Image (tube, rainbow, N blue to C red; front, side):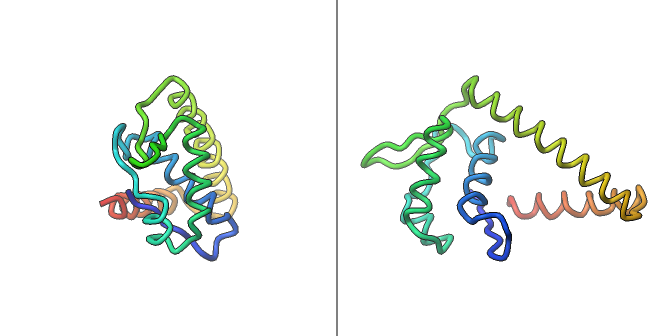
Length: 131
């Protein structure tokens, strides 16, 4: 499991963490049955407050993505129809944001080749960060 926090971002740290964990659960990067770090472990790894991680875990459990087992740990839940619907919603949202970003790039004068080069570079960076 890889979580990256951008400290200077306008997006709250709790949202950054939750969105990354949600995406990893929905995409299959985290597989059903995988054990997540304990609340304390993840808080320590990310240098955030324990309550922040606890609230994130509770929210993801309410969404049906993870299961909190008292005394045993936190596990990724098997995919359900609800989870599949969430994935589809996230993919639709991403598509709209991606289209808007491309439109903004065109308006700023980027050529199609420049946009392709940036996309290829971003994909390579994303693949390397998941290893």
